[in-house]
Image (tube, rainbow, N blue to C red; front, top):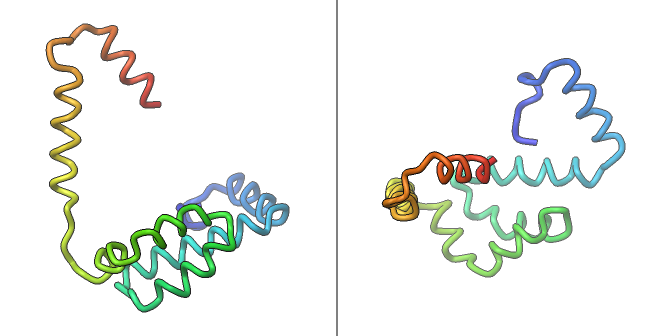
Length: 117
C-alpha cells in the first residue's frame, strides 16, 4: 500500500491487481492514505476536514477518528514546519537503555529482538 507500483516486481504487481479487483474498499483506503500523504507534503491544512469526512466512511475510519479527537494538533502538525522527531528519538533511546540496564545477557537480547519481529 505504501510502495509505488514502479518498485514492485511483476509477481507483486499481479498480486496487487488481483487484490484490488477483489477488494474495492481496499483500493479506496489506499487512495485515502495517498491523499493524506499528499496533504502532509503540500501542508494543505484546509483539506483536512473533507479528508476526515471521506476517511470516516472507509477502512481507515479509526485513523480518521483519532484526527477528529485532536483536530487542532493535527492541523498544527500539517501547517507548521517544526517537528519533535529528534526529541522523540532520544526519549525512545533512553527508554530502551533503561529497560536493558544491568541485564546484558544474550537471552534477554534475543527475547527483545524476536519480540520486535
